[in-house]
Every structure is written in structure tokens, then in C-alpha cells.
Length: 182
Image (tube, rainbow, N blue to C red; front, top):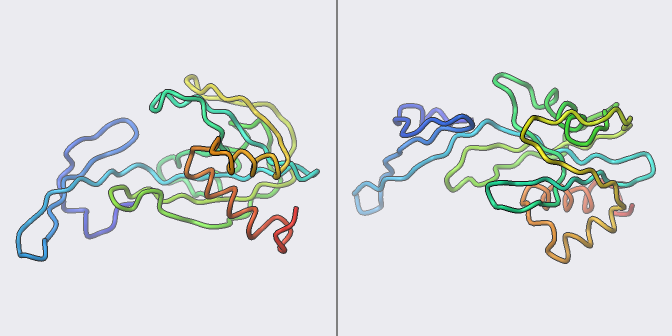
């Protein structure tokens, strides 16, 4: 979401998934410094937890980095879509599990030094398997696993996606039973 203070700055590039604005910042010495601000839509991240306590992780092929990454399901909000509606939709589409309940856990900026994206993190429970509904370009495999296994992937550096790191660590530290135990 673009702050009002940046609305008057010109759009330098408009793509399918984001805009780039050219911004002039005031320097301490009185001069100006040109920067760019990337404006994607805001997004959701979902921590899907099965009734037995396993976390539903995915392996997601990411063309931009040329790798298949361990991730939690996530997705971009459609224009004027509420994050509360986006979270269950993305969970179901990417994992094949429809949540009975989605509870917002935390919200954070992904890269506030140059990007406006706000990430809304949800806990999804009461999961019912209904099958994936992937976009034409998505290549996603589903892997339910214990939280201990997911945290081992984090510790070993196998989870390289920042939003997934944030979501798993928040869940492990503050949510799993309110006492930090699975």
C-alpha cells in the first residue's frame, strides 16, 4: 500500500505484478537523492496446521531465483480483496487444504527500504483436504511435517524464503500452544 506522501511521485514502470515509482528524497546536505520504490500488491502468508499438529509446507518452484524453495503458502491480494478472504483462498489453492478457521497472527513489511509490500500472516486450522487449485504457472508440491522437522529445515538453512522464516519462527515462538511447546 502506497503512503500518501508518495502518491505524487511519477510511475517509472508499470508491470503486471507491480509498479516502480521514481522518488526524490531530501538529503541532509540540502541536495536531492533519487530512489525507486517498488509497489506490489499486499500479500498473505498462511501457517496451515493439521489437527495432529503437523505444519503443511510446500516446495514451490521460483523462476526468479532459479530454485525450488521450502515455503509456507502465500499469495497476493486481488484488487480491493481483504486479507481475511485471501488467506483461506491461498491456503486451499496451494496446499489443497481448506481451513475452517484463519486467525491473523502478525503483519510486517517485507522490504521497507524500497518496497511497500505489507505481509499479513495467518494461522489456518480445521483443515479439510479438498485438492489443490494451482494457477497455470505454479509448480507446487505439498509436504505436511512436524514443526520440529520444519524448524530443522530452518536451522540447516534449507528455508531460504524470508516470509516463511518469519511465519515459522513466529508460530514456533508465540503460538503453537501459547507456551512455546508443540
